[in-house]
Image 1 (cartoon, helix red, strand yellow):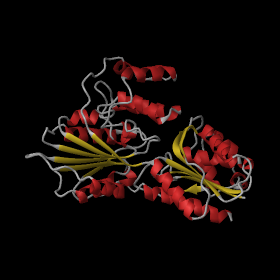
Image 2 (cartoon, helix red, strand yellow):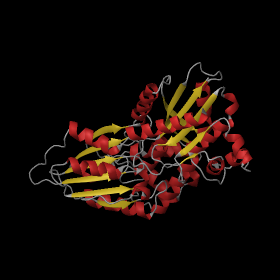
Image 3 (cartoon, helix red, strand yellow):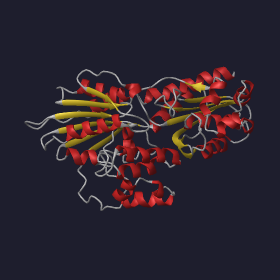
Image 4 (cartoon, one colour):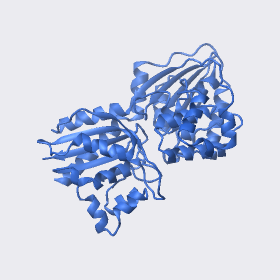
Length: 420
């Protein structure tokens, strides 16, 4: 029975990924609302940023009546592949490096040539924040990388991290629109942010920022991070704000975590599972998220096959030196609490991009026996969890979900299947 439930959980996971297919989402949008014709003498530039940049660019080029004057793709190394008619380069993710800075410089050099007669089409997906970096004047790549590593280890929620990232960038928080002004800008956006705040997706290159420098300063001070900042970053955050008006852009959401949750729900119901209300805001610390899942499930076993579906993006406070990611640690924590779930069950937590942290796994798939199986393999699951080494723990029990890069990213989904 458990193996069948594991297969169903994986089937639902792939259903979520398919619903977030970036090429299909772009094609549907451009079929419903084609890009407006160019003004006389105008040029069109297409820019694709993020983990789903390659398929989004392919779909856009196929939908356009004429080839653009220029087309640039910036994606992560795992998804790097040729796109006929476009230049394709890679940045670094999740921590930006020189390749990300080179990509940021290439983007700026391309869009700063645009005029009022020109069009910029921007295809945005998750990961764009790290893949292109253009430090604000006075900051170095090392400064930004230092801050980014600090943020990733801090446990801050993604919107709060992006508030700080935007304050340190020439491209984030509407910076791309400022650089492209006065050209017409249209952005098609695949959301990896819970709640679909367009200011937070890839740090919002085509929308107004989440806040001002003063907000970033206050947040860093409140979290006890201010004193650890590089001196140049402190100086920049204490300089006056840019008071220029934000240029207008047409921003269109074409895919999201919620869309994928609804697709999983519909498929689970078609398979005969009872699906209670979706939980589409599973965020915050991974330990708290695990408890929320357990609270939602409640202790008694259901009286019929039930699928609890969650979506979100949690955070992990790094206290150890192990290897893993938020989905793997969440799965491991549910395995640890197996006794609180009656009946037969399986739990899957996975990133829709196919990558969880700096590993080759998308997440984990655990059962009531996983915790004991780790111990039988000769490992100490509690010690591995305490060391943030969820990858090694789940690998010992053959509980990793490894599917490779998916070419999309709409955050994470969780599936808890239970039978009486």
